[in-house]
Length: 105
Image (cartoon, rainbow, N blue to C red; front, side):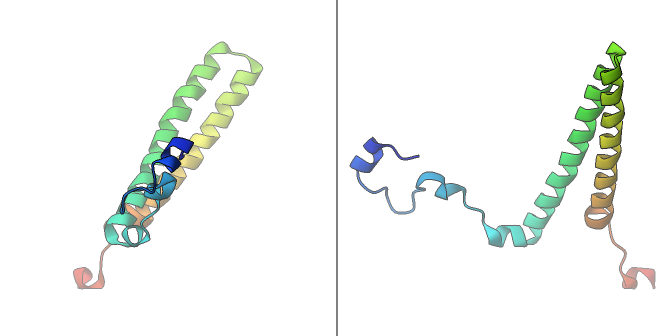
C-alpha cells in the first residue's frame, strides 16, 4: 500500500507497478498452452500434497486412541480418497497422452 510519504514523492515512474496492480493476472498467458499446462500441473500438485498432508495428520491423530481421534482418522481417510479421485480425474482429462484417430489407423 502507498503511504503518505509515497504520495508526497510524486507519481511513480511510467511502467512501475502501483500497489497491487503489479500482481494483475495475465489472461493471455493463462489462455495459452503454457498457462493451461501450468494451471493443470498446479491442480495436480495441490491434490497430491493434500493427500500426503491428510495421511500424515490422520495417522498422527489415531495414535491417541481417543474417540475424537478415531473420527478424525476416518474423516481424513475420506478426504484422502476424495483428493485421490480428483488427482486421478485431473490426470485422465488433462495430463494423460491422448490418442488421435491417425495413430489408431
